[in-house]
Image (cartoon, rainbow, N blue to C red):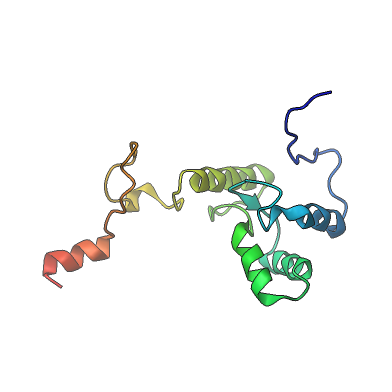
Length: 138
């Protein structure tokens, strides 16, 4: 018997047919962090649908729903204007990468300081506004 941990990975040829199966996975503790150490949980589709699913999972408990929703990236992906499946996949993979390295996924042209960080260099750099205020003496 294979004892390696199994990942949740639906195959493209057998898509989840309805929200009930999605809820079944989510109810196994993914949103409260008890069934997975995953740092990224994404949900495709409109934010309103994700909010409805989370609210139903929380049984109407607003505080619990807020906790669940804080773990969920919904809609999944960065805002790059993705329209087709390939672009949406790129958007989601980019967001996953940003989350895994504690970045916001913004444009490099807006980044102050080095593009690449080295171990121990996780100090927050000042924003352009903070720098401008500092230079003006505010």
